Length: 130
Image 1 (cartoon, one colour):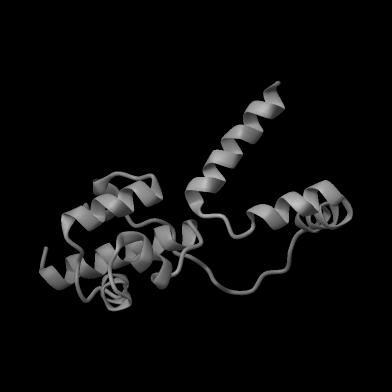
Image 2 (spheres, rainbow, N blue to C red):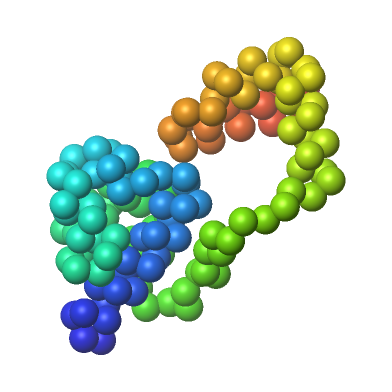
């Protein structure tokens, strides 16, 4: 595969994970210890990171190297078009607003990083099983 084609494929897969983990390029740069220009170049198919940075991304995104660098079928494209929430989503949002404990919990975790959210989710599942 030509280098430019590989860079673009990597960028598409990276963008998929950034969206999935609700992370922007600046956050990626910070978490991988590089400048914003490097993260911009990776996300736009200009360059590909060194393998040590790919390994850091794999830890961040809970994926394998192959998920970022192998020529696999692309993940579904992200559709950024505005959508109207369905009734279930509106009901959940209303529950969060009306329930003081849910509202406080949501406020606490709203800005948590993906690793912390995963840990909280795991703990919540354990509590639910109890």
